[in-house]
Structures are given as C-alpha cells and as structure tokens.
Length: 92
Image 1 (cartoon, rainbow, N blue to C red):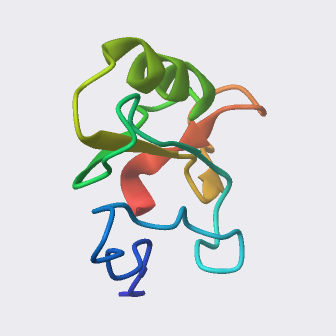
Image 2 (image 1 turned 45 degrees about the vertical axis):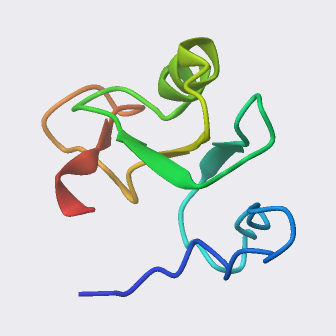
C-alpha cells in the first residue's frame, strides 16, 4: 500500500497548513482550504464507480465547514465494468 503525505506540519502562529502539491499525490485531486482560513481538519472525499472527483470538490466547497479543508481525489484506474470514461475508486 502506498503512503500519501498530504499535509504539512501546521504553522504555529496561524494554525494553517500548506496545501498538498501535485508531486505529493499521484492522482488528480482538488484541494479547497476552509472558508475561515483555519485548516485544522481535512475532509477527504472519494467518488464512486463511474464518477470523478469534480462533483465532490464542488460539494466540499458548498459545505463551508468551519476549520475544515477538503480534498477530493480521483480514482487512479479506469473501470472495465462501465463506460470507457468511467473511473473506479475501489483501488484507492
């Protein structure tokens, strides 16, 4: 199993974290910091069979949870059971 380090240590003065970089996460993703600027928590959103990370990134933004950043990840492999554009999150 591959280990993903998506968070950096918090800045002691502000309580915020730097966003993840594309080199740290080997799949397409969308990161949204919290609306209040305090990213103490991270909500990770995984899509289901045949979907992508995009609608879940929008959901994370719309939730506007205080002190919660969101990270929506796209599945790394295409599914052989659906249409050719479908992605499979079962291998996360």
